[in-house]
Length: 139
Image 1: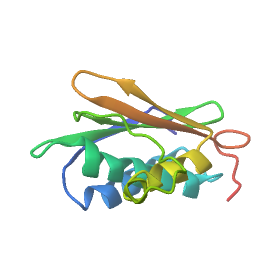
Image 2: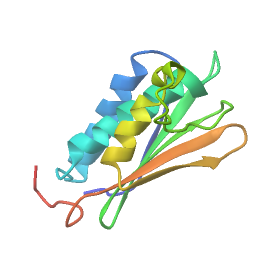
Image 3: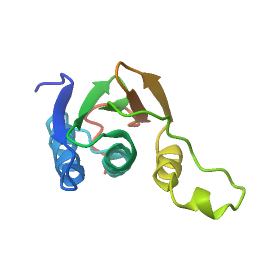
């Protein structure tokens, strides 16, 4: 069984979100991670959707890096766009409602998430613990 990290480049296309989910699902299966797999896959969906909508300039793509660690999985989405994603404020401003809802889900599901700089662009990441670690077998 191979527990090495996985990465794949995706083009700026709508179907890349489902392809990124499938790619991650295959990695989780190979690593025998069942505990919180749905949470991880939802975080992948949200982070890759945000990259496509806000972080990937036309003609470019994003890199998805999925890394297992002792008690969980780290998901990184690398893009070359400007800006820093943020969770919307609770001000009730209608402009806030147009974006950031995906990050509310990531905030609720992941143990932690953040943004790191890269040249060019950024890395948006999250970490999800999986109970007893790899192969816990819980669904």
